[in-house]
Length: 233
Image (tube, rainbow, N blue to C red; front, side, top):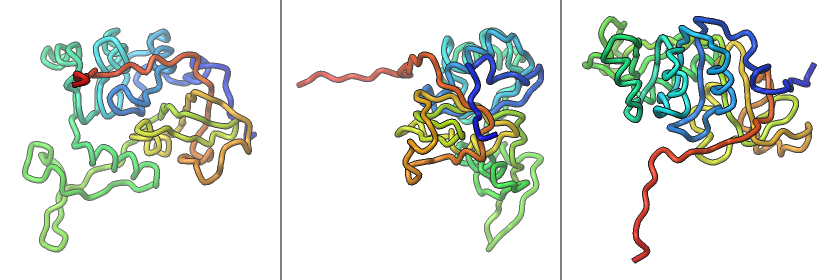
């Protein structure tokens, strides 16, 4: 029962249907579930709601799903690197909910902890606050933000074992651990799949209890979103 390994990304995304709500880990192009995104594109599933810090770029990451018109709604914090996203938003083809980055992270965390909602000062006095309940604590106004309700969380880790325990590498840790806790079904793709006992327990970021399916990815491009260089002198 503790062997949660599936063969590949195509098997891992079984059960994702038209209209599903998905969390996708990563920050920019760092730590994104590349194999699962490719499998979703091939599956042709549509009317998806994607919860992610950003929307990828035009030809990589979630940008691939936007290109094939499979995304109905994006719930994100930063979306400034995707021209196709911009086009769909301005033409009314895509629903968009922009959320302060800290609020996005905390709504993921609340879902993982089983909390229905959180109070946050982010967005008070802005368009973000429209239609939302507010409350004053110690003289300061806070907005009520509901926890996310995602059908699937899809994350990418550096190493994982057959029990689903995960280790994320450096900045790829970003949104992945929070989202891994929060989906009704959590899918993890890893660069290296090892046997139980091979991971140092003190280094595990996500315990396997949160993970339902795990597989070793085939290839990772690990594209750099913006290449910045300088002269040696």
